[in-house]
Image (cartoon, rainbow, N blue to C red; front, side, top):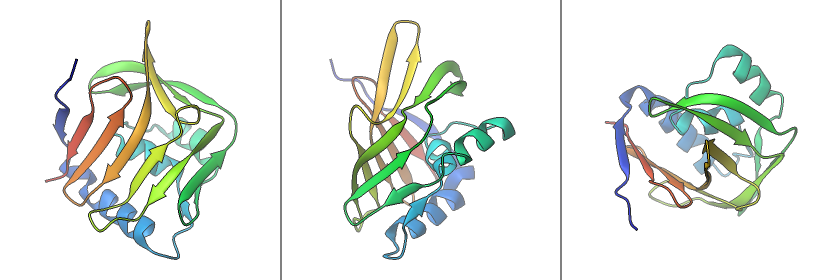
Length: 149
């Protein structure tokens, strides 16, 4: 079954995403704060949660890969108005592309961010960042399009 992506408007994230794209597209860009990764997925971060994520350090970027390691983080969060359980795996890894249309992070299935509710669980498969749209691609679930205009 194919689902149409859920589209939400978040013009408040436009400058943050633009800064993030600049950081990721820069050849000197070697690290991405994990808090920014969670925030760009449309998840609000409380002060306590921010400290927990920041303690893991940044997502380290190489030419074609990314990596972050630390303690697993399990936390209830609100996504699209629904409370879900967010799990950040002890290892986050995958491929990294600097494209003209914007950077792409493609997560390894076993080393990703997952979201669950009751018996449902999905993981973050891919994140495409653009100046007007962010596409959050979840495995086996509806994708999320974050309209920045």
